[in-house]
Image: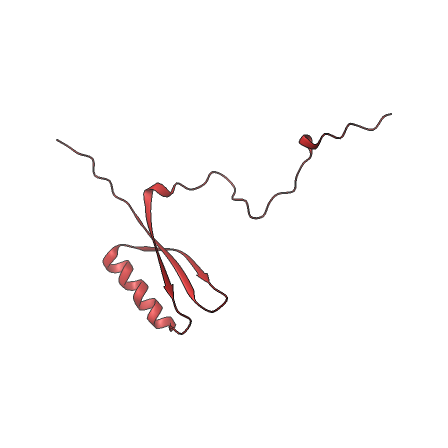
Length: 87
C-alpha cells in the first residue's frame, strides 16, 4: 500500500486563538470615543468621568485596556440613530 499524497492545501491547520469566530461585528451602527486616563488617576476619578459620559452623553462601555505603564485606555460606544425622512 502506498503512502497518500501530501497535499498542502488539504492540511488541517490548528485553530487560531486570536481569530474571531463568526462574522465580524458591524461597526457602522455605533460611534466610538477613546478616553485615556493617566497612571496616577484614581479609580474614583475614572468612574466619575465614565459615569458622566454615560448619563449625559448616552455612551456605554465597550472595552478597557490597561497599558504597561499603568495608563487606562477606555473605548466608549453609542448607537447612531438615523432618522428616516417622512416628507
